Amino acid sequence: MENEPYYLTESKNKCREQGMDPNKMPKSKTKLSNEQLKQKKATYEEILSIMSFYVMKIIGPLKENYMLIVITDDEGYILDMFGDVSFKSIINNIGITNGVCLCDKEMGTNSVDVALNKKHPVQIVGSGHFHHALHQTACYSVPFYFSESHFLSGTISIMTTIDRHNPYLIPLLSSIVDSIERELLLKKKNDQLNLFHNITINTIRDGVIITNKYGRITEINHFVQELFNRSKEDLLENSIFDLDPFGKYLYDVLENETIVQDHKIYFDSQHCNTKICLLDALPIYDDNNELIGSFANIRDITEKYNLEKQVILSEKFSAIGKLAAGLAHEIRNPLTSIMGFTHLLKQKYTEDEADERYINIISDELSSLNEMVSQFVLMAKPSSPEFRLVDIQTLIQDTVKIMRSQAILKNIAIEEKLLDHEVNLLIDSAQIKQVFINLIQNAIEAMDQNGTIQIIVKEKQDSVIIDVVDEGKGIADKEINQILNPFFSTKDSGLGLGLSISYRILNNHNAKIDVLSKLGKGTTFTLIFPRSSKGGSW
Figure 1 (cartoon, rainbow, N blue to C red):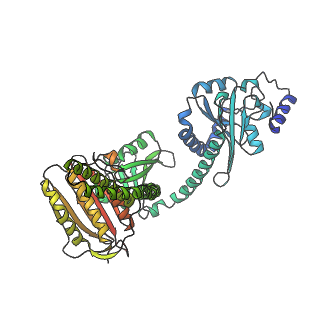
Figure 2 (tube, rainbow, N blue to C red; figure 1 turned 120 degrees about the vertical axis):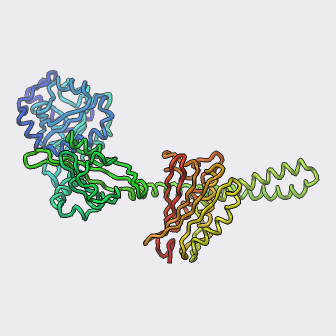
Figure 3 (cartoon, one colour; figure 1 turned 180 degrees about the horizontal axis):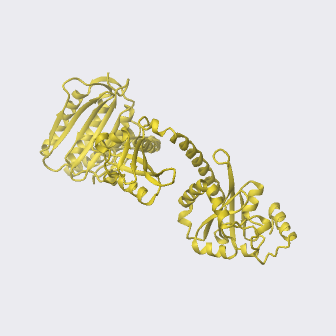
């Protein structure tokens, strides 16, 4: 083989010196017994469990494409192998099975042996192997050494057919090893923290549920009480199976002794908007390894999830901002000239009604185009707010006066539920008024004839909350996460910029906007202004 690495040549020469026949696969002389293999697996149990999870998660979809995953210990003994069933059968038939030692003195030149000796990732393709039986395969091996968690080492390898050779499988395996090491370190730390579980159960911010083996709740913490809006006394001794959506997962833990890890759950609480939680659940055993109950840990990642969405949305706005700057220059300059000449033509052709009508149509369309460009630029980069201390309730009343005439045309009432005292916010009144106009306009357009729009002002210790509630057709779940995106609209004639502009304005005020909607029932837009120096109240 041309340009063959020296270590492969060295290994092949060693095989020849030992009298190996490249046409015959040898039988391993030091294969582990079933009991020895069982003990080895027990030593590597935690590593094997996490490895199989990561490998199947990343490579699982490829397992029916002649791909085999092989995990060995630090001596090259195969601890486990899984993947494509038919390919595994072929490999087993040539003597490569669990318990076999893949050192070159036993099985000839192979990637596992080289990776262990050279202590770096290795790929051997086709004739790089000593034995001809392996010339139709491509093998990739990456050594691991988890010194900070288990002080165990070995290799993880991918074996496939030569026509599926892909050099990118080496960095993929390296990435898996890094992920496993991080997971092992994290698990080690979690095990240490579990020693203090009984002390800290009611001080941690995650939800904790403990049940007996029959699914009766024996312990919960304050987070769970808030999540279900029920007292501890009301929940204790109740069946976990009756508590949706967690019951079915705890049933599986108790019935099948499964372990649930990082399972995302959308929880609709009675007293708050949808929460997004990560569920971990596992069985609890006594000293005799008898199942005595289950443990569930619930992590609220709603804020993190929403923050990620905001980051993505901000990146979109940043890209559109650059595009908007170019559009403003490239479109507005010729547009201004055309509008000017159209105005001159309008003055000149006033005697012919047909000509005047056509010129008016051109003028109206140019004005619409100019307005669309203005909205686009405003959405991408709204002007900096000019903060003034304003009574937000007075601003709402002024906005409602403007919008009430449109509502009356559809026989829609607008009700204001305000507080009996001033609520002063440091805001740009013109920009916030534009937000209210957009929301009320959307509410009117979402409703058929008749109905009521409510604008409700509430206060909390750290925020001022304003709800705009309509009785319209509602927004589908698949659309609700997109309504703040530029150019997305549920209306046939909408540009999809109104809510995007509102979002940018509120963002510049350090305020938030939330949406809750049900098809056929209506939609509630919630504006949350924090009590702070800017974008808050004094």
